[in-house]
Length: 80
Image 1: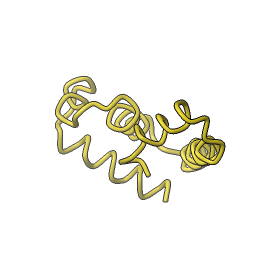
Image 2: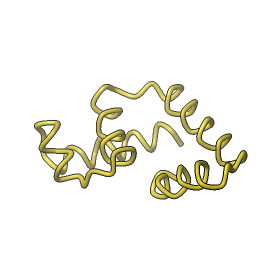
Image 3: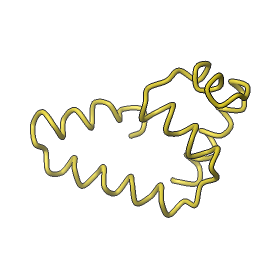
């Protein structure tokens, strides 16, 4: 679902899709319950919510692209 987040959010606003709104609320709750580290939250937010490519996220976080990738991967595992 994270990879399709832009389209999911667009569906919610353009069509007023109630089920999509519930899905987004469930995602937000799952992220909260996953107890992510600050770096995992930051990487996830930049990568999926702000549509940064990992190279740009890495630059903004002052870490390597590989580190961003690892933070995103571990965050997704904790959320799932």
